[in-house]
Image 1 (cartoon, rainbow, N blue to C red):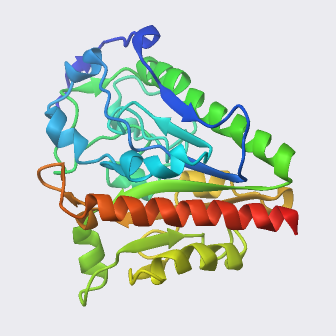
Image 2: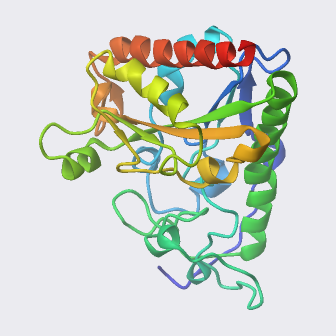
Length: 296
């Protein structure tokens, strides 16, 4: 990374941070969270990066929101981030910052320098998907603080509100954190036929196993290869919003991108609409199953 100091400010008043659906009168104890589906880039941000928009978009969960549109239309409570993951990564802890990215990082500031930071993918990414430096220089820590306040905190505050609304109405809720995963990772981990669906439940800690099994069964019934906690057991959202004693459960859904898209071209493939039907039907059936649990 160059030693150039990047002094810029983003006009957050012009940014649509998130959109949500089916919140006024929640009908199901299931919430869809889509933290990596956004593709908006603030113009001030684009002036400070080395990467093209197409390169940065390879880090987002392409078309995941469209895969689940029929489930949203069926009334499932949903929150979707509109800003790109390359700008801010909502599925990281607020403290997952790499001090080497800044020219003025506070010496007394707490950090959580974990595996994500080490590889350059903390709450603010240091690299793009090609592992090239993302920024043209060193960041101003105060700018990132504003980014966290105006983007990260806004999304998480709204997600918390939706969770509380569901718990108040149904006595419990489950947050399904919706993602896609690169096919290359799936094939490396299982070189026989790859993994189609990964369900991360923190090794059976984030929700009752019968909930995970019911959802997995929706895909098993259509001959998808489902793995629990491989290659992902659950990241920040799955961990942070999991409070079983308060009847707040989480599950991370990862879909192999090659099933519905040309990953390199960022385009839907011929199987997209079949995948859309299968994923949305699985979610709708899951929501109805959870609603029956309330009735019992």
